[in-house]
Each structure stands twice: as C-alpha cells, then as structure tokens.
Image (cartoon, rainbow, N blue to C red):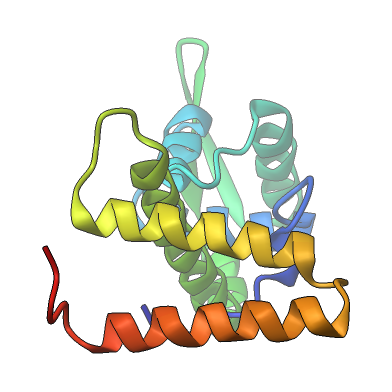
Amino acid sequence: MSSPPDTHDFSRGRKFGAEDLHLLLTALLADAPSHGYELIKLLETRSNGFYRPSPGMVYPALTSLEEFGYAGISVSGNRKSYTLTDQGRAYLDANRERVEMLWAKLNYLGKKMTLVRRALADGDDSGDTAVVAAFHQLKSLLADRRHGSAQEQRRIAKVLERAMAEIASDGAGED
C-alpha cells in the first residue's frame, strides 16, 4: 500500500468538519440527485465502511447547502431529493483539489480498515491475514516496551534482527 495521505484529523471523534462534509455531499450530488439517506449510504460505500455520517450530521449539512444556494430540493411525498445547482458546481470546481484529497483519505482509510477487519475475522487464517495480525501484535508489544532499559532495548533489537534475517531467508530450512 502506498504511503498514507495526511490522516491526523481522523484519529478520534468526528471524521470531518462541516466544510469537508459539505464538499463531499456536493461532489456526490454532482454525480446524481439523491435523498439524504442515499448520500449517507454512498459515503459509507465510498469509504468501505470507514465513514458513515449520522443523519444528524447529513441533514443539517444539506440544509446549509440549500441555504448557500449550492443545492436545490424537489419534494416527492415526504421525501426530499437534493440536486446540485450551478452555484454548487462552481463551489465544487473551486474546491476540486480539496475534494480529491478527501476522497483519497477515505479510500486509504477504507482499505486499511478492510485489512484490520480481515486480521480480526474469526476462523480466517490466510497468510495475508496472519501476517497482518502478527504485525499488529508485534507493534503493540514494541509500544509496551519502548521505555525499557538500554539492555532491554538491545535485546529487543537482536530479536528483531534475527527475525528479519529469518524472514529474508525466504523460508530456507523451514519444517
């Protein structure tokens, strides 16, 4: 996997600010008119399950887009369908680089989430998943021991060097 986009703002809590959510919704509306629930599902799908905003985030954002003149509404029964306006297209065009960066973050984090899910899946002992799970266990162990004595740090370094040499040997001499 390539190096991650800047993901520091995804570490906890809300994954996007209001402006970012407005941009993503505008980008989705540029593809096709949609209902609020459809937009929630599209964001979840585009992020491979990483980002599923609540209706309490999406509907106020859609109201804001309407108030800014970026989205229009058509009502059918008790359902509102949102459509991007010309002003909304101009807003999207002016922020295209930011939108592409947001999609790249969601794509990267969605792929990462898929790997974690596979690593944690019960009964799945495929090589790829086993390696990912072992890597996460090692990472956790090393984090727990990072403040050890100098002697402990040297011991850990030697263990890791032996493990790296064994991995690099391509399994020669394996049972």
